[in-house]
Each structure stands twice: as C-alpha cells, then as structure tokens.
Amino acid sequence: MPELFESIRVEAYGPGGGALIVECRTDNRERTIGRVRQVVREHGGYIAARGAVSYLFNEVGCLKFPPGTDTGRVAAIALEAGAEDVIPAPLEVLTDPIDFVTVRAALQAAGFVPASAEVTWRASITVPLTGETANAMLHLVETLKDLKDVEIVYTNVEIPDAVLARS
Image (tube, rainbow, N blue to C red; front, side):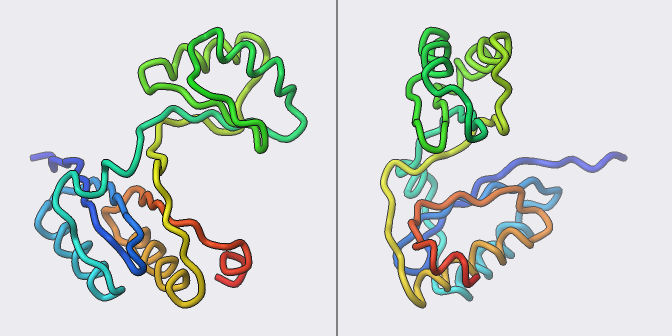
C-alpha cells in the first residue's frame, strides 16, 4: 500500500516575538507536529493557533533577476502583464499568485529569464532582532529546516548582516 503524505502548516512565535510559518509534508501528522513543537519550545518559542501568524504574511509571486538586468524594461513588461510591484535593487517583480504564471511568461517571452521564480510568503510586518535573540532565532530556523518533514520555514524577522555573517 503506498504511503499517503499530507501538507501541514504550523504557525509559531520564536525568540523575540518573531513569527514563523513552518510548512511540512508528512506521512505522520502527529509525529511531525510533535517534533516541530518540541524544537520551537526548546528554542524559547511557542506554537500559535491557526491564523495567529499567517495574517502577518502575504502570499506573493516573486521573480528575482540578476544584477545588470534592465530594470526599466522588466518593470514595463511586468506591470503591463499584471505585476503588482517592481522592487529595483535587487530587482524583484511581485505578483498576485494568480497572475504569477502570466507575468513570468511575458518576461520570458521578452528574453528576461529570472534567476529564481516562486510563489512564496513575504512578511507584511517585520520584527527587528539583534544580539543573542537574533542568534537564537537563526538557530531555531536552522534546526527546524533540518527536521525530516519540514519543507520550508518562513519568518518575519530582520537580522543585521553582521549577525548573519557570524552564523
């Protein structure tokens, strides 16, 4: 009998009040939620109720382009195709998830192939963390990513480059 996998989303808060969305794919829901809960608690956080964290994020299509890409042309094509926003540095095109494929196709047809393109969650409100709190959050995120069933971890924290470079 083939194993049945399901997608689950766990919402949590970590050190310093940073929000986390942990997306998992598992054949054992209780095992996975238990492991995520344990890791979050061990790192000074707690599991939140469904919807208590996700409202801090927006689901968006995000296309990223390498340095040197013609920002003006990309912006004109993307906006005409239905993009919501163009961020110039580094060059990113943001779309509604529904328009993602259309905008990507229009840009590729014009010769602009993104370095990366995905539908993702982006924080609408960020929480700045520094020092030991930032290090604790980074360690929590890395530990979660190392769990077998965890596919991706989203967070709304802003961590200074100096702290990121040390990790």
